[in-house]
Image (cartoon, rainbow, N blue to C red; front, side, top):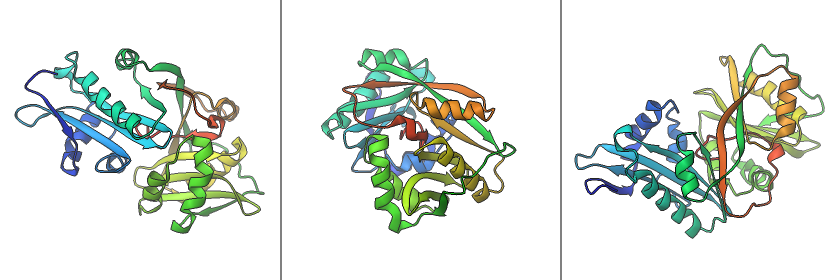
Length: 285
């Protein structure tokens, strides 16, 4: 990096400036997600500042056991093409690999893809987004019971999530279940968990959403709209390999829009992408 720039770990005091960097490129602040990677044992967030303390770049990584996610990769316009992005990415990937992550993934914009390719990330496919309007005729499966989760359900939700997502998201799920602005809905059949959805009522935003099949995902959406009476729409971000989910949404008449490209590095891990109907946010997977 240029000598007048320095890289350090982010602190809570950096949140407003990181949020502004995200807002400046249209990503939205998502401060709850930023707090999940700042000062956490299983995550690292770094910033690059100049001699006056102005923020030039940010990047983060979160370790989910064998799976790690890179996110919040932003370099301010005035500091691009000077090695800043490479320095941040190397710092984050080094942290994740030392934390035991075998597989690293991220969601790449077209502008960021060349940087990631230089660091041996390869394209997996294109993630997609779908906006579900309240006016859509959704149907709840009468055989599925949906209830709000509490702290006592944390271990069960994490156990359901782990083999489907491919990593252990217990710390993030604990944060969501303990947040007054979030509501976690559990779908059960005969007392067994068959899906869940986390809804933030302050945005409103839904994700993560996992379900055994599209009918259960649709049932969760019906209950999510009931829990967020002021929401006109909810957006789902599907990973590239949830083809049954994409077909279900098209069958409902929902337009599927291409989102950022998913990229990965390292050996593939056991997971079930066809059960993932909504990511938490791009930076957290």
